[in-house]
Image (tube, rainbow, N blue to C red):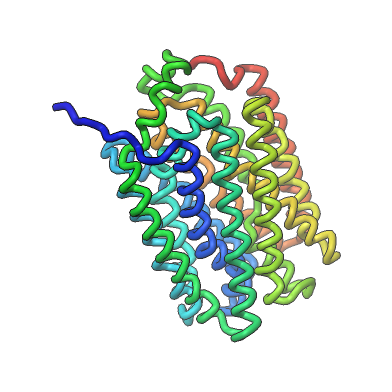
Length: 401
């Protein structure tokens, strides 16, 4: 049974940019909420361990559940349905978070928002990857991530403004329903104009590695970099724990945390653009900067000196920019289109397992001794860097599996 595929009504760059606007609007929603997750949970009596476990579990859900959503997206080919469903779940969870009332309900909503990201991300990244095959993997994902961060900058600023006006988490988060509705509406508009984004890629795929494209299994190089990035996540703490430290240690007030998070998102955007362009020239070697930045972030952020801690949070944002742009570009280059959503799901599951362990580990170490936390994380990231160097010598990223 043959099916005529309509030509897309947007160029690849316009598709990337419009999808970037969707992500921008949704980042206003969930990054606005994440900017105050630590202080919000603390207001319900959470300890450092609880904040670490909840935020770590949230990241584990956002990453680990993609092991299910990725293969299902590949199997069903309903990439738009998975994408829209995930965005709707996030848009519905955040506005009611401020009215949770009790710690368990707030924790459940924090995790539910992250589940929405798990539902949509493999399908969304796969659709974007088709367009980036034409415009450049690194540049395409970098521009998409930079637009994300415009929203990630605006969201915390909006929450900070509302907190200053009302002093209440409820209305400060409820206002985020507006960009959530706008994002979902724009997503439907984009689907109507590009119902099959995969039509962007065939010409580009023909020039790539045909032996990999014909394989039913994920390439060995994919597993190499999944192992490395999983190792880096073991020592990559959450912003929830960082903000918990800043507030409970008296370095900043809760109202300042969203402003700081906005600056962190700006650092994320700059890092994504720089490493994205570098990736198109140098390949996955740019990932060597990830464990260095991750270790530096913890070493600086968990001090008792306000400006050193602030610098550490900005370094944390730079590391996050690499995770959310260049890592996705690497997966798209290593895995053929027919298995790409599965690969994004498996890759995220590896990171999710590491995030769950890392969230609990860093939270427990912080409660015991911030110095022990720093020493442990620096050791983990040093081992991750050595692993990357060893694996890169054993097998070049572009080698056939």
